Image (cartoon, rainbow, N blue to C red):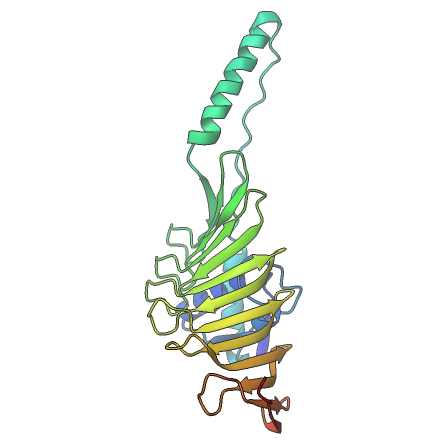
Length: 264
């Protein structure tokens, strides 16, 4: 395998992966788990898009074509000459009234990227009329349907997101973010509207995964991770609702130690 491209974030990596797939070029995203999620969060060189050696040149052609696509910048309004006397006061009042109306009534501004050149934005950045960032909508598999949404607070900071990770039209995955990093996530894997897989993150990096019994709401297994590798896990072996056994794992995910967890 050969490194084709180092995306700026995991979301961009998966978008390019899907773009290559549409061109019939297999690829793989490495390191996305180290970033701790998707979205526009910086990957700091952790994420790589790799392809087979014999597909490299064809894949580079696709990437170069994508890199040549530029998102146009909005044209600033022309400057107006300063008004004088009473006209200046009247103009100020009118500007205030119109500005207030536009702030509350003007439509949301959208900008983004059309990855597959079909005339429809696949990655959309949403802004309020005042320019505040509102969030992101993404069509990751380029099928014309939004499958990932980020929501920002009043300061323009992303605070939550939801995803349709099996692309069936239902958003089964939800995340909570703090200071730009993923903090908590939950997934409804069986479609019963109850979260049965929960994840926690430390500074945006996966820390633990909790598997929930859908009938009791209690965890049946909690896994702990370091740099994407499983290190330990607590398991309810006898299915009585209590985690009773702790396993320790090697870097190759082999059990190296087994310990009974005493009852409280």
